[in-house]
Image (cartoon, rainbow, N blue to C red):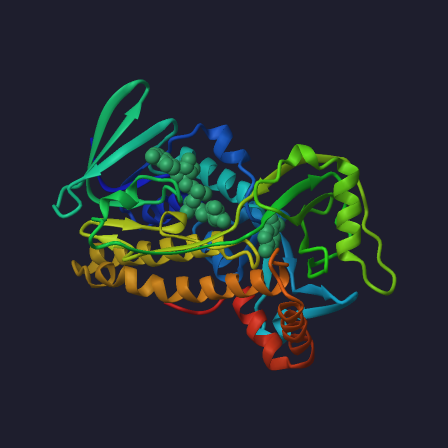
Length: 391
Ligand code: APR
Ligand code: PHB
């Protein structure tokens, strides 16, 4: 089998890239190791930046998003038993975000692709990519119990942090940057209307907590927990009590409790690999970079990469010039490093490090007070959260 662009991984990056290429008349094949049900159920982030929404709409995948997505004009920060709202449109010249879960983005893109898109093979496990430096790189994969090959003009690794595409970049060329965090998130889904219309990010002496949502009737909540935490150690009552304690403010506010339908622990990591391409192999999304989830940049960064890449492939098709493809890594890394910094900033400002000193805590409080008291400091947060124009 031969295709123009072989895409490894059918997460949001791979699926959106396939949609954008299909719309530009460029043929591609997506190879996804898991089955459809698994990809559609995998719980991940839920915030879309304006630019991500714009591209989903333009690509034809915005219909349900427009019907069911929740438009948010701000977030709330809590610390010291006080609450402060960050107003995105006022601080950014009109930008806002959408609450629409990654699971739903994937479902919409999969449905479109199976209806009229490029081939999408589930349970197709890629083992390796051969010949990134040649003009015919080859993907080796296993499907329906058989070893198969896909020859390509180009290969894009959208296969996440644990994927294999990154191995196509020779070790001597690859530079990686990494930071691990001394805490994780315990995330729950609960069948209860969200207790706030907007997301609430809480700093507290007991650690970080986040109130998010999936719909007007489903809440998504997170608690900072030590690394290695077993969700089984957290009874429903313990979770609600701890959330209550961390969100507490002076004044009226009640956390609504309801049946918890899922519990899971997520580690936190910052990671970047450079360059994001080698020869005819390109990396996009989590295959090239990871951010800790505070600030909700992961999905939006993945979308931004494939938007740049789809534009570069279309430019090649229209003009014969590979200049945008050649610039892909440098173009994306500018946005990636900005998002890395913002995600690190949000994480370290709001979480309590187990080794944190009272001095460190005072610095966090001082930074949060600054955001509350200076429109400039608030705008810096709002612009990064709602999405920057880079690349
Ligand atoms: N062969 C085929 N598919 C693979 C392989 C392989 N060897 N290895 C991984 N995959 C698939 C995974 O099963 C997954 O569906 O690649 C896909 C990668 O998807 P994601 O991990 O969701 O990564 P990406 O599409 O870059 O999206 C980034 O995911 O982690 C979140 O916060 C992050 O929201 C962001 C998004
Ligand atoms: C989520 O809804 O899952 C979510 C929202 C905001 C974040 C992280 C996760 O910063």
